[in-house]
Amino acid sequence: ETAIIKKAGAEGRLIDIKDKVPNYPNISDCWDVGVISQKYLENDIDDPMFNGARYVIPTEVAGSVEDIALWAYGVFVRGDVPEALGIDPKSIKTTEQLVDFMKKAQEYGFKDINGNDCIVATTYHDGWSYDDYLQSYKQKKLTQYTTDENGNVTLDKLTQNWIDQYMVIWELVHEGILDKECFTTSDDMAKEKVGSGTALFTCAQYGVTIDATKQSGLYDSNPEMRYTWVGPLDYQDGSALTQIEADGRTGSPVIFFPTTCSNIDAALTWLDYVNSKEGMRLISYGFEGDTYELNEEGQPRMTAELTERYAKEPENVKKELRERGINYMASRTYVAKKNTKWFGESAPFDSDALDPYLEEYRKERPVEILKGYPIDALAPNYEGYQEFAEWAFDDVKEKEYKERAFFAETEEEARQILEEYQEYLMTNEDGQMQEFLDFMTEQSKTRDDIVY
Picture 1 (tube, rainbow, N blue to C red):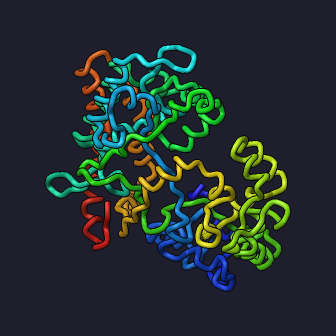
Picture 2: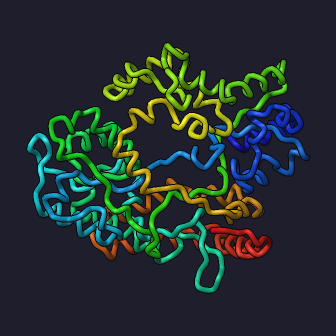
């Protein structure tokens, strides 16, 4: 999409809005560093081939630190498991401790709500995101690049640490701990396993697990099975886990205007209004006295009747409101979101109907801003980068090697497959990877604000 939009701009198919947007106060901060990153600004908004023009307005971007979405990733365990094993799940801080915890759960012989044997650990769709189980192998950084012992730029997946962490997944599969179906499962199938308490451990975003148990009514029949968080696990250096963010979003959906737009000022006026405090309240909450009331602080809150229904059947209420345009348009047209700053909540119902366990866990994973220019922004300067990236950063190829390793018969065979992938990266196209990494090493010396 990025390449196509840029091509359209370079060919004169889009309207230059550089001098227009500053005239609309509610969207005029859309290009500010902190709202978007320096990397995004330099490489996409101000692409050299635009010759000084600007064609896109970033959307779905936080206009304040408070409005950065807290995704609440982590590892979660069925509540009765640590209780039965006498383990404080919040004391688990490393992947090694987690694996030991899982093995003890496997030995205990827990059952699900139907009396069936349990899966020890699972994921959601297509393995999302088993990397949460490997957190203590991760470094606190923004990119997949790192430096080797000689100070040269390399890729994380060319390091020994990369092999060691994925050997843990091999161990979990080999020992019958990690659900063998998880790498190809759908979210619906995964939610069934979590919703019935069949999976003792799960991962990804806490909200997804909560939704699965709400759909099944698990906690109504078995409140002791409420999934709680493990850890959170620490980073490799032992520091506490946070939600790492760049100083401004590094990419986003965008709004752009083709030259066929008959009234650009009318379009920008509308966009400016829906991003004003009044306009955002309208499209997020609807009408005062109908769908919302004002609290003592003058902030909109959905009516008690809607809030009560939302707590029991959130999807039905969302659908009903969406059919009236409420809180649907907002998620597609906000530029620099300030809902939390303005209204005290990120979205309708958050204050009154947000799951209290999710709210508490979000405090365990606060946002941490890493300032600087991410080194991966230099990569596209490499000659022939697009062709190189097609094979060097081919997620399908990487997934194929990893999953072959996960299902290998022996530890030696699994390790060999992962090493073969590294060898493939270093030898393909006559060793182009080393040429690229040498380029990145030299490029890293051209700025004093590089971060990894």
